[in-house]
Image (cartoon, one colour):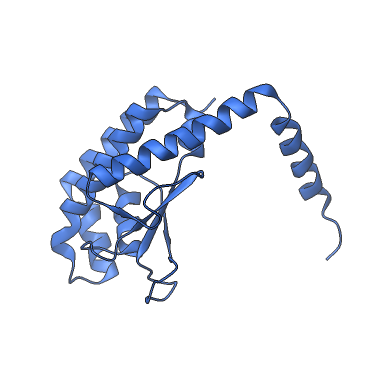
Length: 170
C-alpha cells in the first residue's frame, strides 16, 4: 500500500514526544518497573523465559505451572490484570494455546506506579494462579466460567480497581 497519512502523523507525534527531556525519565521508569516486576515474579516462584528483562515487558514461562498462557491470561483478565498469552522460543504448544504469558509496564508507568505496585501485582498474579490451579483439567470455557463465579477472583479484581483509582489516567 501507499503512504498512510494518519500513521505518518502518529509517528511524528511519537517522535516529538521522544525528543522531550521527560521522555527519558519515563522510559527509564518503565525499565525499572519491569525489572522490579520480573524480580517480584521470581520471588513468587514464577520462571521467566530470560530469567529477567531489560525491556518494557517480561515473559513468564508457565510450562511448569497448573495453567498455561491462554487460560491464565483469561483468569487474570477477569481479575482485572491485562496480559497477553504468548509463545516462547522452545514452546512445543501452538500459538493459539501457548505456554507463556507476557506482561508489560508502560501503562502502569504512565499511571505513575512504581516498585511497590509492581510487587503487589506479582502477588495478585501468584494468588490468581493458586486460585485457578484446581481447574487444571477443565476446558478453557469451564475455566472462564469458574473464574467469573470465583469470589476470590472478584476480590482481586476489586483490589486492582482500587489500586488503579489511586493512579488515574490523566
